[in-house]
Image (cartoon, rainbow, N blue to C red; front, side, top):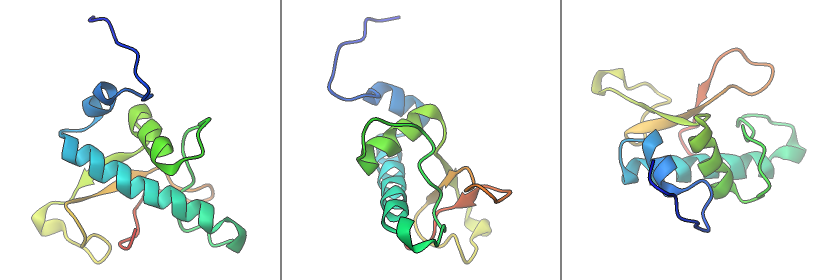
Length: 115
């Protein structure tokens, strides 16, 4: 295994790229999941519970860093939408980040369309 250089980014970009098929996919997935995490923190006092909470324990409070840590841990993945599979929930973009369900629900839920 080649020696890993010390960088300021943890997890390293190389580890993140192993989880997805391209840099574009990584950027799109991380941005969408970071917006979901930000929405979760903004709605905490309202009791709505529509967005899954962060799935990893992080020392950072920044949504993008938490999203990268979730991708590296395999907790946030992109589910590609096939052309014939379009549904009412899945009309934006070429895929949706899927995260484990919020406590009290049974299945993983795709991101809301406006996220």
